[in-house]
Amino acid sequence: MTSTRLRWGACAWLLTLQFFVVETIAQLRFQGPYSRVDDVISDLGTSASRAAQLMNASFVAQAALILGGVLLLRPALRATAGRVATVLLALAAAGVLLVGVFPSDGNGALHATGAVVHLVGSGIGLIALAYALRPRSEVLGTTLAALGLIGTAATILFVAGVTGYLGEGGTERAAAYALPLGLALTGVSLWRLVGTTPTADGADGETPSAAGHSAREERARARAERAQRERERDEALEAAAGRRTDDAGTRDDEESSGDADDPWAAPGGRRAD
Image (cartoon, rainbow, N blue to C red; front, side):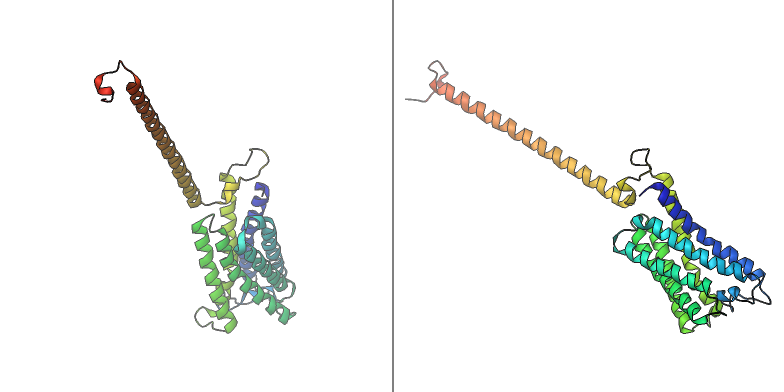
């Protein structure tokens, strides 16, 4: 995977933070009072909002950024967890696309379906992403898992209508905010990986095969290599000692044989008749 592709994918996920900027602008331009605790996000894309087109465009852009990052970073998301994460995040992108194309005061059924698909795909997708990226960074994996669990729990409460604690808008935001925060954090981490990992040959921008391994795996491999070298050294020393012992025994045998056959040898070196 080229460093350029990794960088663009990380940038796409980092730009999902645009959602928070546009949401704030739409809230400030909303006709009448608006509360992030009591009012849902979708209200900012209805005709009651002066920034409805901007908000809906943000939903569509969010879908493109999520999916673009998935496609670009897919080679870095390996194993089963990585494949599951790409599918779930793609579903989350499709869901937010429906939210932007079909406002809640237009086609409410498609809008609601898109919202649920987006929230479910976001929470579980972050958990799968955590497992896929944990070999690179334990801290990143743990943080993504925590965000995914929060998002999934808030989604269940929101769909079930249990919103008395955080309010309807607050519960929905606890479910929806987890994904852009998690993707942005992942984007920053992968961007730093590009900046600190040298290329394979210094020219073509390819990351080396060891780039996907964690520092813990690198240390384990170094310990294994060191142990292998020590074993080889010990075997070489044992073989050398064995050769010296064999040579000494051979010399002793030769000397004993020579003394027995030598008539001029000392009396102690010959057999008594």
